[in-house]
Length: 398
Image (cartoon, rainbow, N blue to C red; front, side, top):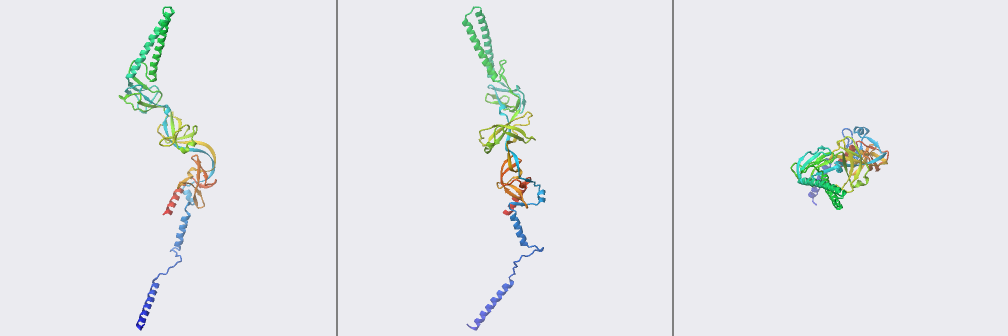
């Protein structure tokens, strides 16, 4: 190796050392120790504490006594109670079908006059619709003819009896007259019965007939109009006696075992201030084709007319009383992710605890599992805790 080559290698080594020194001089010094903020707080320690607090809040809600009072959250204890189970069902007021009649024409004819309008209150025997019918005129004529034949047969029989008593006529003449009288009487009765069965008076021979109310009630439908051709198959109007109404409640299949005739019921109608007491009079053994529910019926007196067919209502069927060891206010139970929970009081605030509810009377509910008697929990305002817990869960998801 020549002297020049040795010099070149030495210069290159020196240049490499110089560059390495410059790089080390420019590298910032990293301080791994926590650095306080201008106020003397450790920022990384604050971040760690915040994460710890967030993790501690999952499933629980931190609230002070002052915050509990400010939010109107009422505390209660799980206690034993006597419950009378209430089965709450949707219902509707309906007409009493046993006191409802669709009135049809007694014979084919033409509507002459309609005397009432829908909603009219009518008395028993009041004129509703007047018709003209050739068939009615014929029936009246037949009834009149049968009555005349009866009168003639009676006169003939009396004459034959007189002659027989005077030993003038033969016995067979009297017997023939008696037979003719009986036949005439039967024919006259049949003609009169036909008119009465159809609600037709047996006056003068005429085709005019008036359909009258069979009982006092309210006209709820009136399809008939003047000039309309009608027959026995077409209803003229529908009359309902609203002195009694039905309240029909829909019973789901899973609750049918709890329902039976004679059960006490509490009926609530939205427009009426007070509950109405009633008794289940009928439970339909057949489920509805579309609803797949059974019908429980309560018959109620309605003399003041407050209950109108079509009103929506609710029915609470009252079951037998039972002593239950652990109950909470019904409003204390909340549903979170398809789980029933009660917010139990803790030192930090509240904790959502899974429970299994049982029987209920609408005000208090049995706790079958998950809560001991005497446990303090949130009753009124527990929905606020549910909302707060939902916000906390959403924050963790973010």
